[in-house]
Image (cartoon, rainbow, N blue to C red; front, side, top):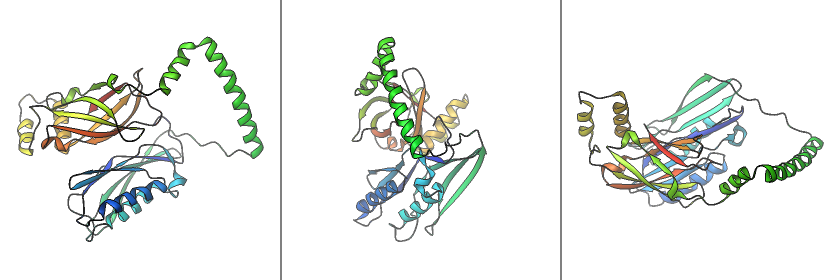
Length: 298
């Protein structure tokens, strides 16, 4: 996120868990996603065999949309999620979910830990940072004046840009057109000996893409393979960090615009490459971004 606006927050990461044996689990999970979205906490749901994962949307929201305390609202939502299980948090549930809230001069980072009895603990740390204060609310007269003034300025600006900056206008039009996903550059240098990303396809939603990954011969299929790789005598720091990411089964996907500007990132799960030679993983393009390059990092 480019601006740290006071009174806003965003989420990242995901929750992964086994499906309960109850045959109505799919309906309950879809209902939970809908309820959380209405509460200002967007998640996307994906089923993978006997497990499911809930990927947090990374858009920025007002803290008021989550009742003023987004971290506590997330906690309540996760405890509600655990109620689909009869005996609290199941074995195998994991979370990389994180809530980042901006207060005056502070960045509040919250992570969430599942407890066997069905409770969710919130662990927070506060980091001093430069934040931006929100603008004071406008009176109705000031609001109407600003709208009218903005409309006139926008019209004049479009005319000036159209006459003097045809190239810029062309770029604006280009961003409004469907993106050629085949032209996106894919880079995964740290993982080239283990797996490759060879294509991107459109998903079922506007900002959802599917990244195709193919396992290479050097991919560690077991924990023992990873332990063996750790013992290599010439193991570099970069190689060690790469092996740690493979051990966890999660990697970071970063998006970059055509001019090299960083557009956002997210965590994706690649653990299924231990069992499958090729997998498709969903990735969610940051709002208002038009990535020209995708980079896989540890």
